[in-house]
Image 1 (cartoon, one colour):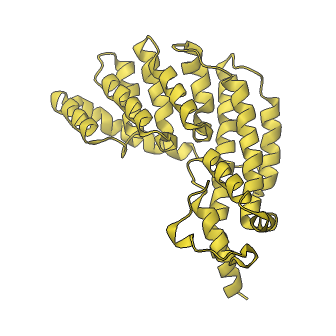
Image 2: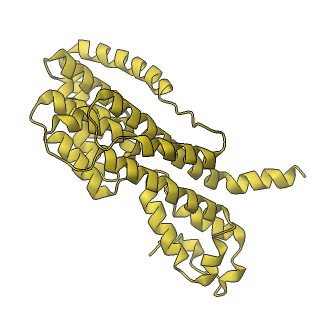
Image 3: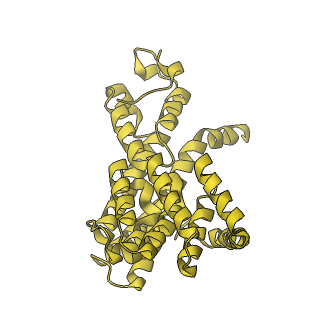
Length: 287
């Protein structure tokens, strides 16, 4: 069941009289930004509380969010079934095609599936494969629900950044830059030791950090329409046109772009929910 904030436990027995602002607060508390699946589960549990709660959904901001979440989740599921239908440990296709395609929608996967994805990445036989996978998945470490998965990817990046192979070293450095803020004390000490042993690594790290700041600017997503529901409709068509399976870098890149749009739709829907009360308050004050 849904864990409600402690101050909301003493709700009226007759939920028809539940204040709108309290209902809105409940909805916001149970819809995490970085876990769409958990948000959907929590909303389903809230709907099942009783008929009074159920009746409040259709004409509310949370009802609108839930409807959008259902459609966005269906798009994610469809894209995932086409781009990553199964996992094969150490598969080059996973590292070069599948992982980059699904990376933007990583937060839609449940914890066990995320762990399987990280396992798959780190079970590759070749160092360059493990490094490349860590680089791809380090783009959105916040989306990993299990901290140990983040730890494993960062440890791989640290090992790669100390490698003698220039390409592996560079990709390891990129992964570390993307992981900035996620290193624990032990990992930070390892990075400092790498800098101490080889001052050139610190220079390379700083250069990569500047490059990544520009890269992040390029990753911003422009939805196809200012109307979020229309954007979802358009993206549904794009998902439908994706081939089943990935066989080229062009197909990977297309799937990646569509996946970014799906993730951005969720982000926008979530932001609208979080800002609903403030928008209504501004509207009231402006009258």
